[in-house]
Length: 174
Length: 279
Image 1: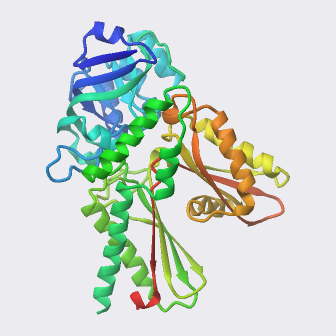
Image 2: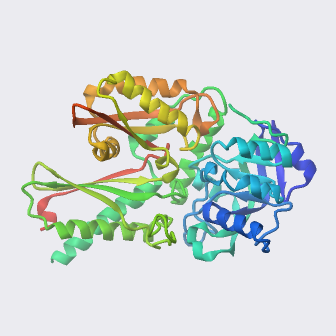
Image 3: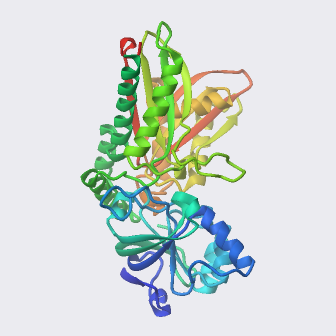
């Protein structure tokens, strides 16, 4: 089934999406991959202030190529989600709900999605140019020293994805 | 004069690498265009892939944001008078220029464990040197994305494992990879030598194919498809679009098998120089 997800999300919006649904995402999307996850994890564990609120916001596992002249961003497709698996259940326990990346997740992530009402969407891997054209604006929010791995805020429109794990912990397996 | 030649050679390399990040080689493109999606979300994924290729070429954007590590095999003619320092320089300068002009993502960190500070240049390139017949220089590049490289692996099999053992090893590595490496994938298989040589062969296999292994390659592609990992790992077919195998002699006690997994964005470049262009 085709669903639309507006970000920041509403709780009802999340629950309406089921594993296997095609999902069109629009709105504000935060970007963070490996090193950002390490830092978010440490920030939560140490009780420090987070660079963005987990409430209502989604995280996209991505590191863009540089923006050519006249573009807001370069290629911007998803990276492999499994590398974020060691961090995600802990971040979900502390309020993170929506994750977008590519590839399968661990059982611990599936279990956490069911427990906390989380959602894992898969974007089309390798399709960086396509996703670049869904991005209206991009700005660095934190950790600029990480270069292509910095934490960004994007404004996206009609960003295509597939729901792999829904908020009941059901998994789409193809 | 020598400097001019060097600058010109580096620019040729850079131009090839920039083009390779935006437009796939003809056979790779044909394999994607000709793939028949079946089951799962295969049709949607293949459609997204084809649209992505269109957008990348129309807007001159890298096909994938992971423009990869520069992997280079430099084959130097045994009788060549080309100075080796020049070979190294043109590769490095060509890669540097490609990253700059081609808006490559800077994906390389200086130390794998401590600090992981980005080098900011996408260098160093990972270069292997070898000798070949003749007097020229041939450079073969893979722009190696790491979502797929993380799924690459080496297995040291028993010498009696035979063709079935190799098939089983490759398929078990692919099963473990699942949807992680951006399927449908292209596979390079290196068999024989030592552990490291098998790994090198598995990358070289993207440029040379040993026809005596075509039966095994065919078996691998069929078994890969039967895993039903499917495009994007979302089920169905195809799972692999190409398998290429290279082998060399090995020890009586062993049968090394290496697999390099490439995502569907199989980016390669071949740049050949005649001796007089670099002397």
